[in-house]
Image (cartoon, rainbow, N blue to C red; front, side, top):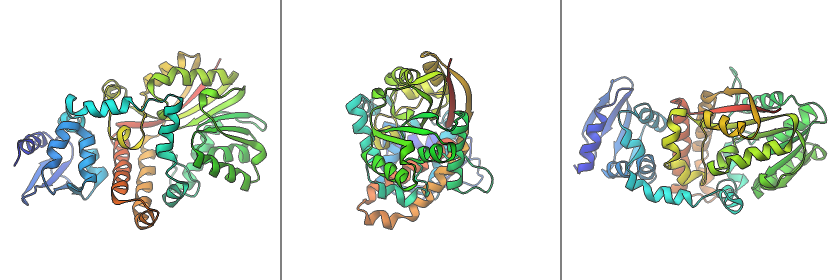
Length: 387
């Protein structure tokens, strides 16, 4: 057993929440934690140990993708590690030197105008066919809002309606949507509320799909969807919506984002911004490091904490009227996405996506599900007023 393996086993003895059944490369079975409903981790070799000590969750992900270990419950294993963060901190964060190269790489993904377009292209222009295989029929790639017995598609509609209701939309209202995705909210606002929506995106794939969607729905006259950076938006709107786009802005650009919201909003106008947030007590360390999501999924991404979001919005004269959180709904959304994604593996392979890519996305969906389930992250709708 390498020295890194011995270090990891000593750390695992500190588990206080949940249980782990570890199978070592030589076939030994070791049990850790409180013994109740253990998650199984099968080590095919010892590479996981040195990787996580060096680079934390990034090493954890990279060795999963490489096939160095497997588990019977991927989100459960990640949640176990998150809930024991205080006991096994080095497994989550790695060491400073090991993370330096990842931090430098993340810093290169700044969300300047050119950088934003490149970063959005990296994630959203994989192809509409990829997302159509495993998202629900509404083509919504953000947290749903569930009520008992609701399907994922119904819960996505409920999320859109809550945002529209927070905006107090009336027929003829002029709405700016910053990050219009595949057009789900624009369709809801136009069809159900009679609003006129100007939607902005940096994804050519999404723009093509969303325009066709509104055309097919007979709502093209109520929507103006544009390939446009939010910083270039100009106009006066009754309301502004932005659904899980803020995470892609980048911390140094937060003042400019909220200045854009304030500039485009009429006096007394309302904005509703749905964003993923990280717990306030974790923000300082998170903001100074980099993680698996930033390295492999959302280059340039950065989550606010609730307090940081409020501070940045209020600095631009926007008052937070309402803050609504529904993180466990995101855990359920991700559970359903991951099940659908795994069920479509053969079809995804036929689209040309290789095993490494599919394992990266499997880990990503499980990682996010676990973070919401453990309350490491949350999703919130902030309603802002321009007084």
